[in-house]
Image (cartoon, rainbow, N blue to C red):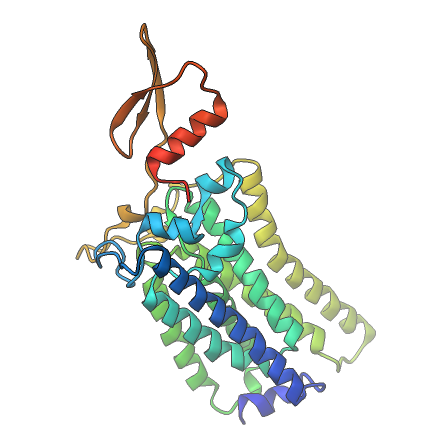
Length: 330
């Protein structure tokens, strides 16, 4: 039985227009990521970074910052909260863009047969938000792209659908094989510079629980009223878990408790072959101040330059000076 026919009994209201709306959701995320990639190239004068810096055929740290990638320091210190919205649309490179959009269409079309268009759109949004916010908390010392969040959300949703309704398919083993292959490929890409594995994991979990909630909502036939209430309660719990991930991520940033450094091996995996340089994504250290009889000096770790500060410098001007010398201003 095909995926579409198998799922039709779950969403009896599915129509041709529903399929068009679902495709529109997938086209939106695809075109947005394409626009993000080529906008970044344009800002970088169409110059790609060396492969040892960015093995995904993309930009370096500073240019990714300019186009809107995640930088926890910019978000918290400079109130650039818009980066949580733009980062899911900024691929780390051409390979990242290809892998992400391929997964979006492969598993997005699968789930389009099981979910209503608004459910598919909600799943993409909550997965993107989960990946972006969790990545900003865990990868707080590096510049990262959260473009894999929606793709991993749809992969997680597909896992949930196959587990919950595996009996609907004659060849579900083949579906699992394809899913695992694509998942392993995207996990490998997530190990590279500028792509955060923890953001991918957050998108996967949010997508899995979000899909479970949607599928439980569509179940109609129950033997007793008690079982119906259990289904509805399970649906609500799944929705709450999916929504709680980005909410907790935003709260962590707001309260100033990012946990950068705890999971560097997941943020970027530095293999023994030294295929890429994880430090290429790392933000420069914070400026330090020192004083003597001549005045107050600021040392910028990014340039190694120490400069004398004007006597009228206030907190805002100090932050601007530090950001400017560290290359953090867009």
